[in-house]
Image (cartoon, rainbow over the protein chains, first blue to last red):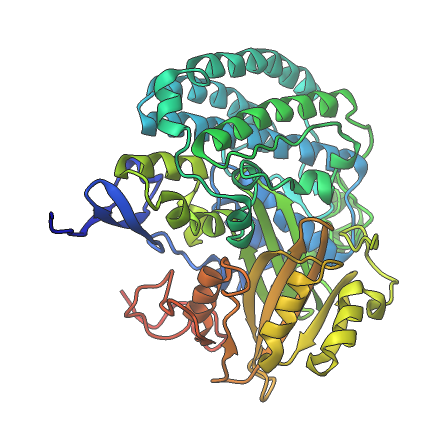
Length: 390
Length: 169
């Protein structure tokens, strides 16, 4: 009988398919994975500690840099937690604009996921195609927010500035193109025999494990967890939108792929309703004392000047208390738990990171699979190390 | 149970009527120390010794069904003598679509039993709490640091830890 020997291999931290600086310590029996221990923290910047020494508005740019591919949903989760602390609400138009950007970011994130996931498995062409469409969305974001990736466009009480008059028309032009492209992606992959061989039955996780391990987002829905925060605890404009939540029960890499592809279509469907029904009105709640006054009024009104000065120098100080707010990010459930002691800086700010929690199920998914499948599983989890390490 | 304690619920409801509080008062009355609420969110402060019993009850009671541990974290209150740390469990029920929060108050050096037997996801979350606050979880399967290097000294999210770090590079 052959001597059984366990070989330990380092995958990363400089491996191209770990999507950043993730190191996985793999223990192999031949080609079969016996143990996979993720080693994280290479990108740890101490965001939670930094936040305790920054004013509430200064924390906002830090949240962009968590999941830097989908900054819009990070901002939104943080802003909703702050608004809950302040007990203010954004006007209807602002909520709809924020939902538009949340869905645009979801498209950006899923496009990049699809490209890199396919490239990891060997279909490198995909990355060229998805980056092309991603560029269009980034242009749309840049036009309004001023930056391509780090939006920092939302504020407590609304958004920084109104969208341009031709914004909705441009989104419509993009969506008409995008809907066709999603079919093109599917034509390349969904029935592709190599793709199916590499993904079907690989990295399976059942529903019970998925729930216990805290999987959220499309990764959980591919295992039969019928849960989407947009539908179950609607925030912003989602309660007025009509959309389906794609759920599959296989729990393998292929099911996670199909779930995300379906979500890309649902995002397009939501965006069409959002630009159709975008309400008129103010884009920020100026009456709230926590919101900067109109810049024009600052120049000729004493009260507005004082108000502006106070907010810049002191910062907005929510009453003491705490709030936990979670939303559906492209990766899963992102949450912010903010404890305020009544000062203008958060006493404690905790980020509930979806990728961090999702990565924990890597071992369950990889155990018993081949070493080449680890790459497919990591890709299907859609992780971003900026948010895992914070 | 159709009580919907969701994010729209800002003020005005009696925390004692929350189904989870009712169940805890009924089955584990000795564990409940305080019931608090803020901005429509309700939480219960429980004693560390009975933490696992409470969490298991919340997970397994069919009327509550908090089968999903959304988050586990800690808050440091150095000025609160004898109860310097809050361990915060954020629970979610996928079937009932409700949220609930459980807190455990700990003194410096005190530990709490691990929740990784109740939800597997608590494994990494507790490692992070240990890494950042130095709170030990009894019976944790893998009590190591997670984000900071293994030879790191100090616990960064404690209030006394300097923002610039201790080492000048």
